[in-house]
Image 1 (cartoon, rainbow, N blue to C red):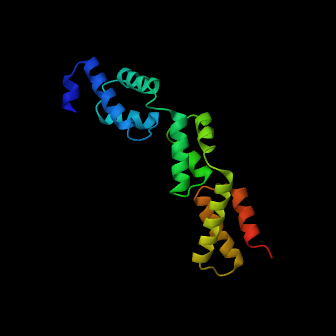
Image 2: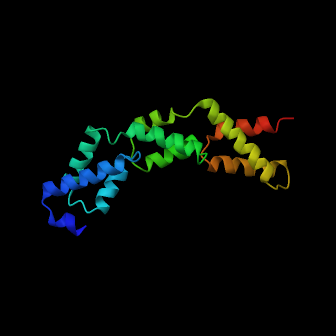
Image 3: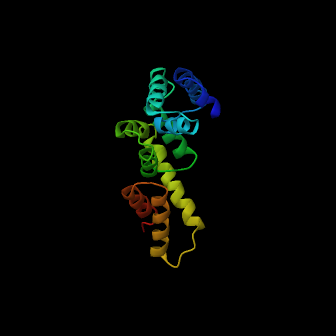
Length: 163
């Protein structure tokens, strides 16, 4: 960090840009993640941060839509999150709504419904409940906590418990 403080403004900007490019070439990042890294690395001012971010965007090291698509796919596949939870996580990173909507398109509807049904049936096997009403409530809370839309959860639970 002290090395950056001794440099001139242009040298600092070039060094920060090089470090950011190296980090971005390894995996996807959004703008807010890079701003946090630049702050941690000791970026002096807003002008320097803006210049580095703009250059990264221009050179396609950062692309918010591409980031959203990767984030949505990964969190759906590996963490088994629903669209609501993914949307909230992306909003917390100050990503525009258009980019979030585009990112959510990366999730296939059939796979989405299949995962929801799998989560519900797996949870049904694990839960100890006093009665059917209690079981439905526990499954509902679990699926909602995973970030699935309430109307889809209700429909899936009702189709599972229909008699």
